[in-house]
Image 1 (cartoon, rainbow, N blue to C red):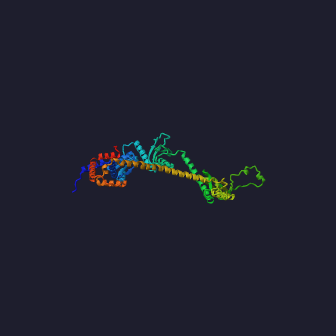
Image 2 (tube, rainbow, N blue to C red):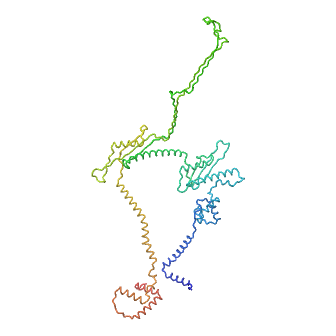
Image 3 (cartoon, rainbow, N blue to C red):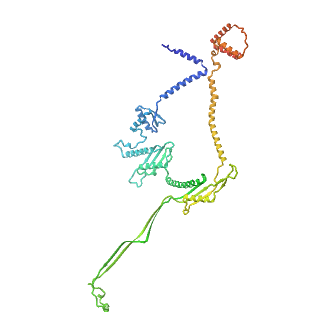
Length: 547
């Protein structure tokens, strides 16, 4: 059976060993022990620390309180992070289950309330309270809808609906204000802001888009001003004009670069566009194109009988009134003829509409580079002479450009083609810039490497020797008992080594060896019993009689 451990003996040995240590080691050893124990405790706590996963983030204070209360009731470990808006739970595997359970209880509510306000009915509610609850619910629903837009973290909506009165001729219009909290690094485009404006205006009865004001949490006005929409139309027109001009430029440069070479052509186009719209309607008639459309003919007749007088002049010149006036017994005879013809004249109706964005004028300018030649026998780095293109080539280029852009002189289009020397960059300047860039790169690398080299040199030149000096014991702290010989054999070995090094001449000893051995043994005994005095004696010998 193993013997029991002697704890007191072990502690005594450890204490004796610690006392024999040098002063620096006596200071460093407890620090190392404390640091090791602290590191072990920290690692054990870190290893046993439970893992947390984020349950909710960006919570309102009321929602955070509700979530924490429910987690306490369910005895779930939780951790509050940040300013209380983030809550994490452990273990992470239960995050989705806890979220579903809290969602079933209506937690979190998002800091806003909607039409769920009307879930609980109250018979004693007045009309004013009902109206106020409806406005609050409408604001909450709008806040939820706006917060679901990408880039918006949260929102607040305030609605002002004036009282309607039958006695007032003109009442105040409803207004609304929206405050947005955007995600970091996110900005809303004008179209998105306009969409939020229309969303709010369409959700409230009688609210106009112009009466909706949108700001961010920094107080910046996001709602476009009244004249910004008109400016947007002008910007669209300018963009349309720039697109047309860019198309003409690409068409000319790509075509001529295939012939003259890349970088040899520069083209610019300016267009005049008519954005007005007109509608024209004309009616024309053809007199020669007559066609009978309808015809009407009426014929009527009537007759009567009458007795006549004696033929002759006498009867005609008589004073008898009956000769002039018909007697009552005579019958009248009438005859009527009517003919009507209607003709249809041919008519042509022409309706024409001129679209917006019609091209009214085109101005084209083209710069063409020439050729560069060096004199015969000139060195490679000699300057080259510019040789312009011949007139025939310039004419062909002008003709090709006219065909490419659809040149129309009746429309007032202009075209200018010039052959001019292009600027050629100096190679010496480029080399100088490359050299300066290389020098800057080297300087930056040196500026980054110098601190690192300084740290390395500081460690090897100062820190390492200092640590070595502190750790290595001095001569006064060395246990002299370890340096002294423990017997005659060791002393003889040291004497033989010294003799071999010094090459002393051999001579016969005049001292009795037995007496010498006895003397040495007595000295060793004295040194072992009084090591401090022996150390002082040796120091006295080494320092030539000085302690």
